[in-house]
Image 1 (spheres, rainbow, N blue to C red):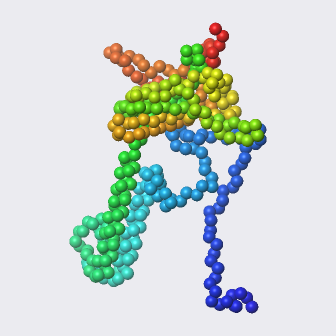
Image 2: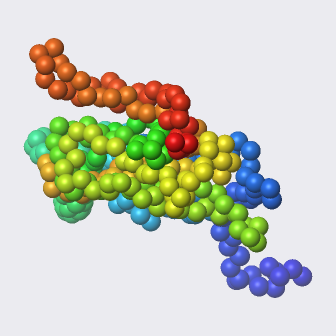
Image 3: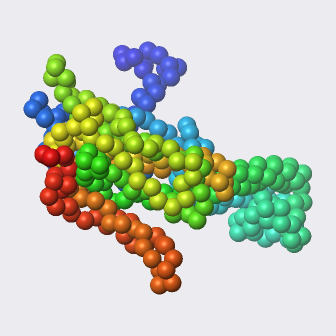
Length: 335
């Protein structure tokens, strides 16, 4: 006799909970160095994180407010429209549960019930179709309450998305390394794209590279680079972040080949107070080893207009020019 026959009243075992399939294990780097051709950014050029994350389960409803603020506008509008239409479909089906509960609506007409739900949720009230029974009036009351709450939430989310402070900071496409007062210096050019001022702007530069410990373990190390000037009271036009490569610098003795071998990445961050918004804004970007040009400098942006006034030519913002001689080496030479 089977177990089911001996216990006819026993509930059947529930099916096991289906979990998401686990991703395949990550490939570990070889003992003698990183995987060839796999250098990726930690921060993309536009400033968002670029590192791939595996094994972190993030449900949409578990952090709905954050996802609603950071989702692209197309997805935000699509989800909002879907929720709006879906809720009206549900209420229309509820109205059809009781026949002839809406005056001037065709009996059993889903379209009439749907559009009556749309008018009720939006509190339009054309007056053509009205609830007739107690059930319809109670359902209408619940739908109006639901519509008011949804409208308040949607308005707040849309306003929060529009009012988020965003920086319009432009970074040069490349970082350059050249002699500055006989000292090799890494330089990054920045510009404020808005015609306003960023107050108490602070700039930071960090070097990320992969190193191996004495025990043979690889890890990613962050080196804060000392800048000649980290803060400016007013950031209105352009500025250049400069780090002198002296004996105390983590970049001392670095070459394009060594930076490439260490998977180096130069991270530049800017923060300050936007005078128009009175809120803190921030921006960041990064440069890989191939985007750091040794023996080059930025093309001068200052010039004169036809009537003799000084002007900034932003067409030269990203342009660089190669240097010759000792300056092209990016390190001090013999006197």
